[in-house]
Every structure is written in C-alpha cells, then in structure tokens.
Image (cartoon, rainbow, N blue to C red; front, top):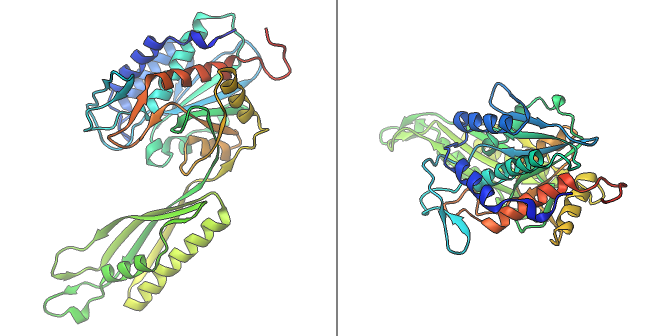
Length: 374
C-alpha cells in the first residue's frame, strides 16, 4: 500500500520546474501540449488529443472503477520566459516581473509524480484514472466546454486547480456569466454640431453609475471590467462596448442581478436617445457537492490519512470542475499549494506541493469503501 513518504520531493520539484520552463499562455499551448502528450505516453497511458489540444490520458487500474483527475495546461495572461527562484524558505517565486505558472503546472506535476509511482509499484491497488488536461481554462473553460465528455468513463473526479489552505475541499462554486454590452449612439462633430450627435459614452456612463457592482451579497458579485469606444476627442462617439461579469452561488440572485444591470442599460440608453445590445453568456454553472457524496468523502479520507484537517471551501471562482459537474461527473476541487495565482506575486511552497501530490496518491490508493485495509 502507498505511504506518504513515497512521493519523491526532488523529482516532483524537477518536474514542476521543467513544466514552468515551457511557455504556455492561454491560447498558445502547442508546445506544452506536445511535452505532456509525450510524458503521459512514456508513463504508460493510452493518450488522445482532440482538435483544440485537450489531452485525455488513461492509466489502467488494478481494481474496478474509474476516476477523473483534471488539470489545465495554459497559464493566465501573456507572460513568457518565466524564471522560477527557489528561496531559502522553500518557497518558489519569480523575480516579480511575471507570474509563476503554479496555476496549474503544480497540479500537472502532481499527476506525473503519481503516474511515476504507480508504474514503479504494480502491486498497489488503484482504479483506472482518466487524466484530463485542458487548454484555454483561463479564458473561460474553453477546453472543458469543448471536450467530448461522453467518451469519459469516470464516475467521479478531482480537479487539482485551486488555491486555499491545504486540506480545503471546494464543494461549492458559483455560476459565472460574461457580459458584453454595446451602446449605439450617433456620430457628430463635437466642436461644430454636437447637437446632432448621441453620445454612446454618456449612455454607458449613465448605465454604469446606475448599476450596483462589486460585492452584492455573500453569494453574488458583479463587475464592469473594460470600457472601449470612441475615435477622437472631437467626435461624439457612436459606439461603446462594456465587458463585465456577474457570479452567484444562487441562481435566483444571479438572475435578479442580471435583470437589474440590463434595466440600468436600457434606461440609460432610452434617456440619452441611444440603443443598447445586452448579451449575457453563461460560462459555467454552479455546483454543490454534499459531504456524503463520493468525491468529497474520498478527498476528505485522503487528507485525514495524512493527518490534515479537512476544510470545506466555498469558492468564488470556477474550474473545469464546473463543467464536469454540469455534464454528470461529480467533482470536487483541491488545492495544489499555489498562492496569489494570476499575479506577479504568485508563489508555491515546495512542502505544500509535496503534500498535494501525497493527497492525490492517497485518493487513488486508499482501499475502496467497504474493503478491508491491507
């Protein structure tokens, strides 16, 4: 049976640093995809890659059952040439000019360490594992939304892609909606005949001022993130586009928030003589995994076997797990040790990354419920 000491700290660190050295900003995953395809094949997986680059690598088990282990290969933003720096405190950072990419290369490194151990210990008991590594996660779960989930056989799964304290089990995630709001005015010369114009900027500003944004309540948030439009300082702008988002763990509250934002836009457009197109696109849907559900129970049992306190976590963000849950594969999301993901202050403690890998090993190798421990 596997033990907590089986994870090789130095090997795991080397794997992580090798992955970080491969540039993979979202939308540019070709090289990292090929690297991972080769690694999974070398480690004994039956591996496929779909038309947009998602990888599914299946490692046959020694007992009945199939589980899903999900990660993503892209990194947030556009940073390239990431140079990790290992501090005397055992924490991996960068020089502060780029992100680190622990989101989600720490999760992938843990998967590769698990596979290395399973190959080296054929006597261990474990289920078949479907490793899914997606592209475009950072740009709205593009890869998982495209993935043909019907080809998966997993009954439940684990998403290695969250921050939070070690021991956290993300059991509840919100619905997220992207907003594209386009105001249409009428162009005119602002210095000669402004009366003939209808300012799309003025309509948009009026709408934003009327919206309730930020933290709406403990379950709901909303934001307008970008404002673009106009051609020159002396031209009444006829087009302005707002991009924003709204999220909530409560669908009724989310619908109410979206209705209020739509009303603010329509009222502002009407008052200014403009028109508005309000487009709301659901990016991922909420899920809630109860403590007695299998993925939650197995993750909690793994943490407890390592002497780690289980911490139920309600997330304000989404992962590929939202999509898998929506498609009928119940999943919880687990921490990999990453901190300050998406920021130049992103870092990860080696000890936490090792603990995350040990947790994954425990999830896979603990005796199934109802079986006697050996």
